[in-house]
Length: 151
Length: 174
Image (cartoon, rainbow over the protein chains, first blue to last red):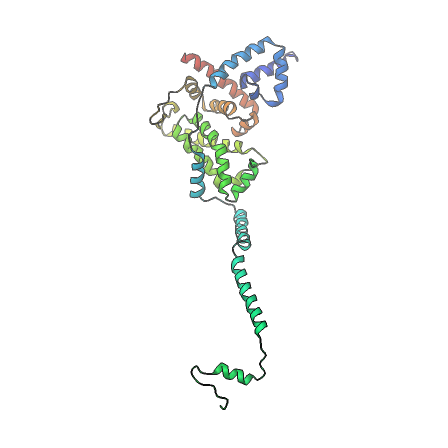
């Protein structure tokens, strides 16, 4: 084969395989294809023949009818994901991290506020007890019994 | 702003249903239409398309964005499903995709097959797949070769034969 025929041969092969639409041709070979077409009546004739088949192929009008949103919801809500061990561990850690950063702070804050309030009240109203025997008497007095200094 | 697909897949791996929904909306129509052209059976094609989306949800960790585009990965799964189903049916009965047991028509809107669709269905499975993936699915020749587990040269050979056979089929129909 004459070396000059190689680009022509390749151009013919491409048109015969991919059709007449430039967008269907391999991207790396498009420029060479256009050059080859400019210099060959035979190639242009082949291009025209394949363009007829392309126009018939375009008549095929299959359409999608599934509702993508519905399909996505059904699958995601109805089926568990199959996770690898590392994904499971990673997801478990994320859940712990999320719960620490979101929900746990509420009871923690409530407990802290209660404690702080208790300390504040205790420190401002604290009165030192000099005679502990008196305090014990108050503490151990049976309800209903009168406190007597003489006992 | 559209999120990058690699990012969306990463979110799907974490169980993000919104990211998954976004990917299904982007890819389901193309996969469904592809399956319809290959198996020529609307109900079966919808089942296949949904199966592919189940794989996307359950096994997204199998997708490697460094190796392929998401659409290529999904088409490959769909291609394998189509082949499995067609071969299984061929084993069970001598199944003609043009006379599938599933209705080819919508209940109240009978669909007549166009000559080009009939001609496509008369092509051998591998030639039809090569032509449909290359011509209708907006994939590069390398991607189609990868989906079909073939080389680009072998794909081109299939395409030449497919287009040649298609012309003959259409001439016969006239």
